[in-house]
Length: 338
Image (cartoon, rainbow, N blue to C red; front, side, top):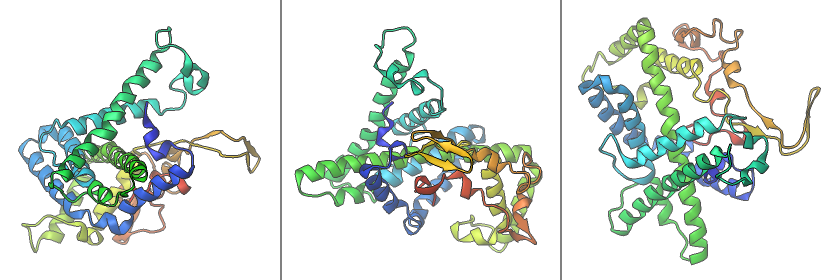
């Protein structure tokens, strides 16, 4: 399907290491804080659209994160709700979401099947692969080349790609290698955030409709905190003073995991865990859904209860933060989690 550009699906070779290092350079905690202005601007635009046409909240949510990421990564401003860059990313990630389930296609179990001709009966997976490979090529190349064209014209807008391009080597061979890596890292950053964050925020709308009492308590906390200045919106700096809303977000992330089986791993060598022998190449799936439903840590786990993360009106650090589960594990933990 052409997802080999994304280092999340590469084995831990030298390319994986370099791509991950470059990605983390732009998404480490101090860098992540520098993107607050862009996120704030797009969020305020989202709120205006939501106010004007609340019935289109699903589309507005897609537009919010698509436009924020396009601007942040490529420096491209998205104005229309049906932006081609956003639509390509959404379709590509939707295809991945279906294909990533282990055993979805027989070729996952019998890799030799990838060599059968497209016209043979039962080779529909080949057509699917060819279609998404072409789509992913657009995902990787189109916005990066558009950003490069703007930079060449002197229309440089501050972005991750603009910073990457400014550091390219003057040596033609090395420059080509660096450019390819930057293109892949930019596309990974864009695709990884385009769908996951959307899913979490759309779940928020669902939960507020299901639990009006939670919505009222969260609104009351905002009204109390902002009462001295009712004309301003809450900001990043206010997080520490809004414990109930912080607990609400934690419970949102726990209640409906965006990636309930995480990203599958594979053992790189024979291993032994307690009485289990794990051969090299074994597919290993972390069942984070079950961890998020641990009835000892989270009593009545199927219920949406933000208060479970609070004690005496502040965040209870003795309750496992779902953020320690939802972003993966070990060397494969999501480098964009901040």
